[in-house]
Image 1 (spheres, rainbow, N blue to C red):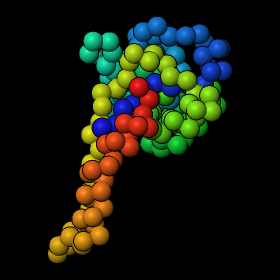
Image 2 (cartoon, rainbow, N blue to C red; image 1 turned 120 degrees about the vertical axis):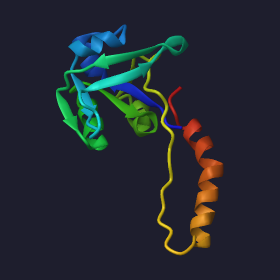
Image 3 (cartoon, helix red, strand yellow; image 1 turned 60 degrees about the vertical axis):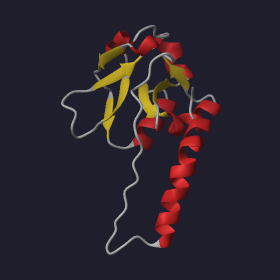
Length: 145
């Protein structure tokens, strides 16, 4: 499982003030990872006690590159939703802080895809077995909770 969280730079939050509820995101600068199947910019968020809300957005930046979104957030251009493991270094360096920590996107399931022409090579099977056994623990140890 992978958790996506809302992050922004401390400078951005100093300029705009803190948020208290996801509804406030519509009036903020947001950095939006654009997926091909989403008709309008919005974030589905899960909050306290499993409450769901949809935050409608007016992004200042939309793109299909996570690294661009991350760098824009670090440079104070707005609030981004990012996989927590992708934010860990910037959070540790205090380049980013978690926004609305009680709210996050629903968790995603991580899939492993591979091409099998005639059969699976033993090395591929060994990698799959290793990832199946160890990846959930690694992700949990390196996630923002």
